[in-house]
Image (spheres, rainbow, N blue to C red):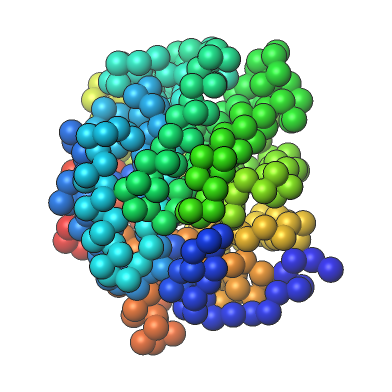
Length: 395
């Protein structure tokens, strides 16, 4: 019998247990790069960004993106776990708890997604390769780098506990560092971290174990796992399901949030909907601007949007795992939330719909027939230059 068949359908707006914590409902604000920490410190604007969906009814909001090392940032202003950031982090968690919601910190290392010339460190990857998106070569991570970054995740989780977070979400998606190790297209290593799936998954498993050993059950531990890189020869469902089974057997995570796409190779594969080429070109410096104008449509591809667009792939995980799963992708109304619960998913995660309407959960609670006002134009992806926001509403 599959996990879904065993599941008794529950109301997505009812409380749900996530590891050692209980959320007031099963709707999670997914990690969305906020662009609101120009100096790498928590700001009042960042607090307000997360306070709004907390006040609007979500069970938990997720802070993105909290780097575990200086070379783990994609840009200079991103949050990093240091003594200097902790007071602001505590102010942030206190504000969310005051609204009755829980708060999670996405922890990870950008790896080859980092723009080396902007952060002042090499962009680490499993192998050396030129990256069009960042206009630099990735530098192969040494075994010392892998050990350092693994311990960096453990230290980040400890600091998250200290700062009052209820959960951490380890980033195993989108070809950020650990996801790039999982990908056979990106990982060309010939040591114990390359080649076979078992070797390519070693970094992920060691990192999840280090985080679990560091914090035990003091907070919930999620991992954001790519189901599919969205490129030929990339990480694909059959391998991802096996990695999920290993993580489940290891007992290192309390839930998996299932995602897709590659920030290196096919970023729009995750988002679906419109590809805002003109808007991207308008805010990019040269030569990136010219590149987008000339060949952007081949890189920023358009995929049709539909509610619950990752559900078909995610079902395959649900059928083979008992581990709690978070369904991401097109979570925009009560109907798709109910579908997720009926199929055995314990939680759902929304991003763009909550940028458009931070109070969406409360509005759905009042009228279950209400639809999100999000039109999936994806112009919010460009808006992070002035602080990520829906361009159809005021900041």
